[in-house]
Image 1 (tube, rainbow, N blue to C red):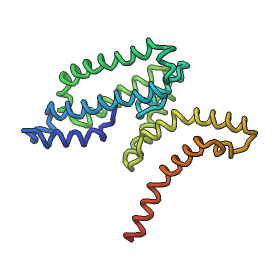
Image 2: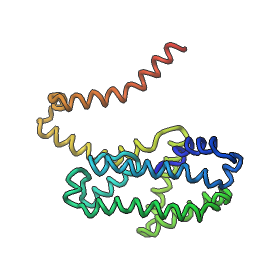
Image 3: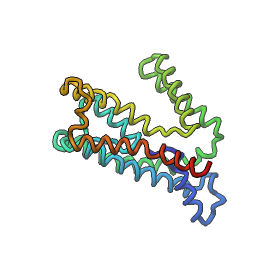
Length: 224
């Protein structure tokens, strides 16, 4: 699912075309239906690269990729042939979840009238209870609190959360493949540049990383 911040453009667009824009912010059903429809559409679309190529398309699918790997499953073209029941069951669950979301959203629309401090306190209490009951370990709760504070810090200062989740999930896999490549090449790092495909991928990755920095530098030089 997309975050609440990602839903703001859809919410504003829905309010602009609404016949009663003054009702938005007080539980207008249009303000819920628009962002939720966009969230559900993006969530389903992000599963396509995950199931077809094994590449997560969002932070949510990155977590799903980690769950697949925990159970020894590698998403990709072979997953459809090796474990088709899982794949089609996952696709069917999207239809079921959309129906359940419709029922829940219509019935829980009044939650928007709950004061924000009380709502946040309830979410924190239930989250703490859920984490503690998994292993009955207070250390797990401390880890969740630290991660929550870190996430608030990143959201406050504009750090995107999706790349962080992708790095956490894909980091061990990248490290494993890097060690394998270095073992095959007897410790020669130029092995990544001997093949045109790998060299092109590294060049594109470097260009995508450095382009925003160079653009800001050029803009600062033009408008000091």
